[in-house]
Image (cartoon, rainbow, N blue to C red; front, side, top):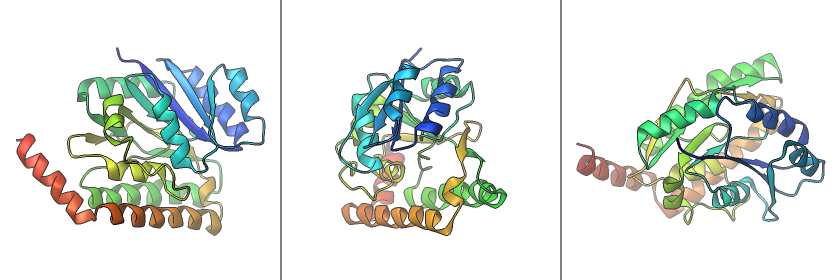
Length: 247
């Protein structure tokens, strides 16, 4: 068995955080540590963490990229799993994560989709039928491997060591999961497991403003990544490594 840390970045989201932590407390395979990275909350996030008995780290550098990276830096386990504040993992989520990554090897990451709850019926449909399939297809085509979905992924600590110095933790408008996906080197395998599902809030699709903000962050993230390494160059580098090492 491997040890598992769960990292949850948050900001002023105490109510869904409490639900997420309750779901983690009901896991058939309990986490060895849960780290909530508090990015400047002014609500009762600290009290929620104390009541749940989880570790809370306060991070002043703004942005989800900074919060996630700090949580991954602090994690002490062999597997680091990542949830959003409003993620609601089923009781066997960590059990599945452990089984997949224990079979897959030391330099592996795994991600899966979300089942949207709350919000509007149209928002749930949009998230489940357009947003996640489109993200997986379009970004996967760009990368040459499946992307990480921030509400539901995990990786081996060795994979994090490969990218921790490359992620853009100082850029507040960057999507952390998309940034991490782009920084993954060829020797790290990324698996997409459709059965590895978690509940995800449909609130980003409650308004055009909220959806537009997510798209704006995506375009900003792409612009940052493309300046450091153009996508075709990145795909060629990964292709050369695959041809050499995965025959």
